[in-house]
Length: 287
Ligand SMILES: [Zn+2]
Image 1 (cartoon, rainbow, N blue to C red):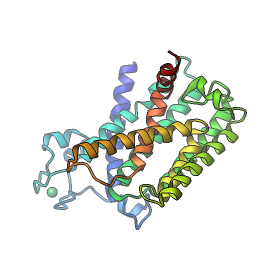
Image 2: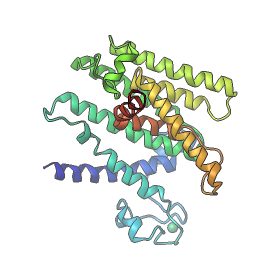
Image 3: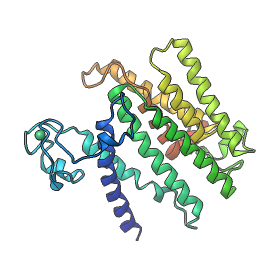
Image 4: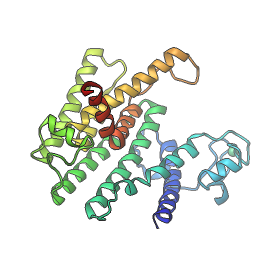
């Protein structure tokens, strides 16, 4: 049964991933991310404008069969197509990760919230990668998702000293676990304050207002102290990439990189590995 549901969820994810590809490719800084006009209409080749048949629009499969080329003009197809489709496929498995043996309604809500969060992270990372812009719509969306999470935690009375954090019981060391709303507001303020100070000190080199807003939005979504680790993991991943650029000096790697993709990668790492990473980290000092 679980295998069947997994395949079904993954297939839905692949299809939803094709939709996200359209959202990413049709984004332009001059218009709203969700502008209805550019999202409507049939799918066309981005090079020759030929209208695509259904068999050219099958996620991953069409790309593989056509060997990454357009059937009409032979222009290379972006690897973004299968990459975003596959990632969305895996993102749609998120509910299985949160679904518990008791099948509680809370676990369904949590799985749903994080599925939607990761999908928005993916769109955000791609758009920031291409444009060096994080659309306000995405930051507002992530903050709104945080508000939903707060409401759900309130409704199910699940927030507490040992619950509601991805670092588990370590969260208690950081305090502020009396009230979920206070906790998440503190998370947002910390995110804004830390990135704000960094922007002021570096005079805006490297990070911009979009990153500031994203740190605030992630603070609303993750709360305190999780937002610390979202930012810390983001900095570590960004630094590793920067070192890679310096060492390899390869042309494939851009010299200037947006920070948004690393922040959402850090956020994703915290959700799945936060507790394990902290256990490993504290183990170094306690052994
Ligand atoms: Zn074409």
